[in-house]
Length: 358
Image (tube, rainbow, N blue to C red):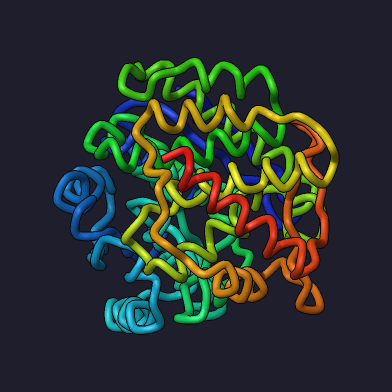
């Protein structure tokens, strides 16, 4: 088992990564709780909920299952979860345990952050994508106008990552998770990036998967530790997300995975970076790796003006100017404001390039 520690401003919390940790979850809880509410989704719950519930040595363990998919990060589900916590008699000495992917972690974490003004919660990620969302303490639900617009900074008390729960993931979900790992490598480690683009996702071993997740979390943790509340360099973690989130909103949450659209966003960020800094970046290498590993890269016809409007709703926008994370080189990110006219040109040429390549 690997153990990392995230040293955020508000608290230091452990990240445990290993095999079959769900059978020994009680060992990783730092204290005794008056009650525990496990929140999961209907896909993950059918595989792992009973394992976790039986492993908790506690006589007041409650469970609540939400629908799988991004649509569950809604105000209605949030209200249902608050009602469940109240009716189960949770108090300020209780725990919420998020068993699932990023949707479960975000929704359950926001419930924990707001129930009785904040109670403990533990992340038990069951997707590769959630290696990113479970570390860093950002929790949220969506609004119909944009993703994660209602939320808080609220770090977990621990992250318990059972690698064996990843074996039930579809190829689509594996691809989604690895887009975020690629993002972290682009931000912080050129050698790691080149290691990844020489890896076929279909032939991953447990050891490789653990190593890649550990490296990705380390890169993210090193940034979060310097800027927990996203006032400065933590914004770098949104590389690829300005376009990715806009496309999610336009195409409908859940129709493409988050990671698939972040992958497209990474390609776009690289193209804008090349034009902004007159530099050469590994666009072709990344595009080839994405294509060889089955990422969907053919977007439907989208009006660049509609995309721009969504990008301006992004949380990083400032005075209605779109701020993008760009790369001066692999491992050298920077923030840049991109004016509307230039951004429209970049979007049009990028969409034309994707159409031509596909």
